[in-house]
Image 1 (cartoon, rainbow, N blue to C red):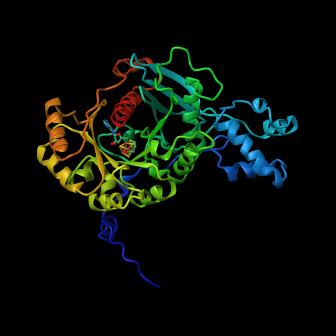
Image 2: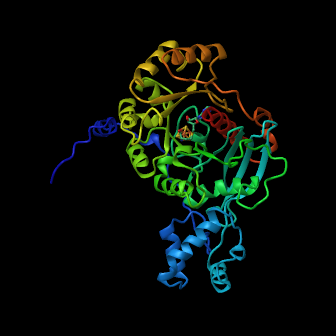
Length: 419
Ligand code: SAH
Ligand code: SF4
């Protein structure tokens, strides 16, 4: 038997008997499939299997899958009866065994600048249990519409400045629940072929699609729900369906190193990395996953990210925490660390939440920090916050106060990404 030496810091820590347990929360709640599952979120082979299970002969699978794919992801069909080129008999069989359900939109807030925040309900774990809810933010701009999508209810990780990290309830979203957030957005905005756009909606003015860009930056750590997120992103990027190119899909991770390369190779989407600190001692505190995958390993994975080039840069996110990570020494070290990596830097004003010990850096400090980054050749826009008015009014949504800052956080982040 060969012994493989674990040379990672986590491996060394484990060998030294150091507890890395507090990095993650367990257990994850399970997803229980409904009796009649939804076809939303199934891959082509899975759709073929679903057809096979109700007796559709194999020779028809290819053609039927193509039809379903079109109705689901181009037309946004909500009922099998809409599928006019599918026989009545097959429509009835599909209806009997499956649905076209997506998550349910339960609340909406609209800002004067057109930003929309949606509270989306997923099926709960047990009948009668409090429903699982995630949030989704839509940011329209003149030349694009960006949707910020969630990958988990809560988050398994415990970043000390992030409110989602304190949430107890954690569940992975299924591919259908992830793709379903885009479908909910397209339903609400009227962004399907041959459907009327939502009256009064502020949408991109260049004639493009209302939802043209996706950022996986809502609740959860997408690379801790890797397979489901990967499958969902492959559906989003499918040119015969939802059709959002992989260049317009950005996944943000706190640094799950082994899945970074996999994600790039499997999907080719754009990468954003939540760096937030330039020294391991501090990053260990802010992003405890750093104790498992420290900065040097994280940046090594970034340097070899598949498809990386000046045209396809990695975005490094850096939350501005007063007196913690915002010194000019930190700014210079940030620039030094990223040398040689085709990168963009997003400075995100910290969004405080009840009970947090952190404060947002002063505006002048953010500007000075940004100047160092800018002088090193990086565009480092600090974005004008969007949706401020609805952030202020977010108590109007009936969810628990605990959730309010998660909404605010998402809006701020999504703003920072839409450059
Ligand atoms: N889990 C992933 C994606 C979701 S969080 C990740 O951590 O990258 C998306 C971004 O929001 C991350 O950069 C995260 O660090 C940042 N964030 C979390 N809480 C924040 C807060 N209170 N203020 C500003 N940004 C925050
Ligand atoms: Fe999870 Fe990201 Fe929040 Fe960290 S910052 S707790 S990884 S959602």
